[in-house]
Image (tube, rainbow, N blue to C red; front, side, top):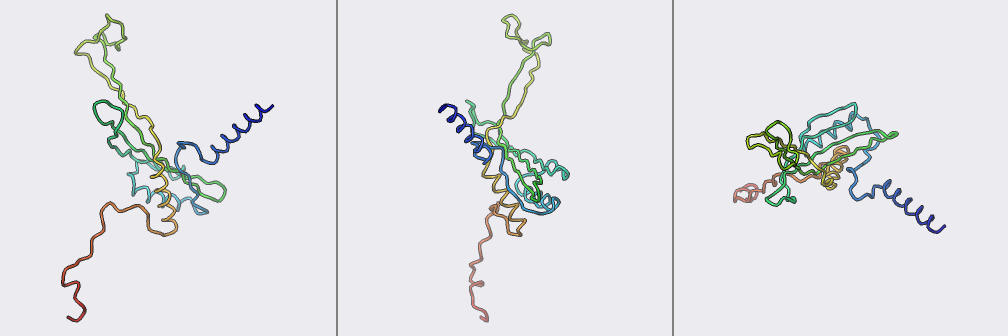
Length: 194
């Protein structure tokens, strides 16, 4: 009896944790944008996400914006150097009752590369000792991208900027270039009339 109660309690805690968004690596960040027209939410969201990524495709009817991958080098697990990596961002807007809900996912992915060398007779090398690939046989490379983690900091920054833009506040994303320093030349420090 006690074992059943403990098991039920553990299962309920796991279910509640999942519903509350307490998973270790949940799929993106969610935020309510409030009661507003879907077109306005889409336009503002598109404008904000353009500040972070280049938009590849958009579907206003589905409320979805897919961004082009942003490529980088990752300190991965390769023995001879960095691993090619990329961030891929997606924004989805849905309506729940009167509210528009925004979901932003920024997937950080690493490139995985596998090579296959074909044997002289056109077959892929099978591992059989006498079935060796010929030196002039073509090599095909299969590239895949594996999810490493979600970038929750960037996801939340994008959502904060969307909400700020909807409230007509300036965005919180830092400028890419420092602001110009005020001039300290003698002519700018003279009192008026001199």
